[in-house]
Length: 334
Image (tube, rainbow, N blue to C red; front, top):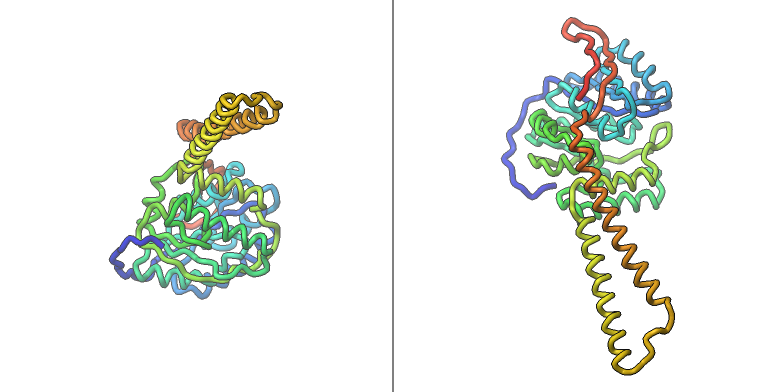
């Protein structure tokens, strides 16, 4: 991942590993997910807790999770007050996780729980971040594979060079890394970039990305494009620089056209041949100005959002099997 050199210090088996799983309208996949997690908990050589974060689901996801938490002491459920978005829900779960090692994964079982022991094994070698890297994407269309490939290469080339390719949010984070990540409280979050930016020893483990087990994707093309725009705005001033460059290009075009008109005048050629050229130049110039203002407005708008200092999320309820060392927590604002 990063070229920075680190000295790895081997670690013992973690006393507790936390799985953080954001949930949004996943009632179709939750029963399958619970079965796979139960199998992992039964055979893992370390203790596991699972922190489900219900991100304002409108289906029966919360009821299914609540029932699971009342049956199994390994499960905890955070119910956010409304839908805050995947990256914020993931942040809420990371904040609540208590493990020495914390693994963020999706609920659709495209992130297989079965590779968790391998991630923990690599973590024990001394790495603070162990990301799961997709080597194949089963059952996805050529268009989906191409856009995913293009997204990561564009982000690396133009936005952040240390962003690992073909790596999503499925990753293990050490406790010291998570403490550092917790200090980054920006509202518009791109956890993949934030993780790479922090540094620390990082590596990847390969896995085969399976088909979604049930339900529908929560990241259609339009949402993916918005996510890419958030990544670009959050980690680079490149859009501003591009609008600046376009402005210079159009200015050069205007100067060249002016020089052409002066030459025509010097040669006694008619200056007015119609309005087409004037309309084209005006449209190009006005369009460039509006684009530049729009890009600038995006940055100003995000500065405005950050300046409010609002909490990233609000936890309405927390559900877990009562135990002597676990008390029901009131609503949290973080």
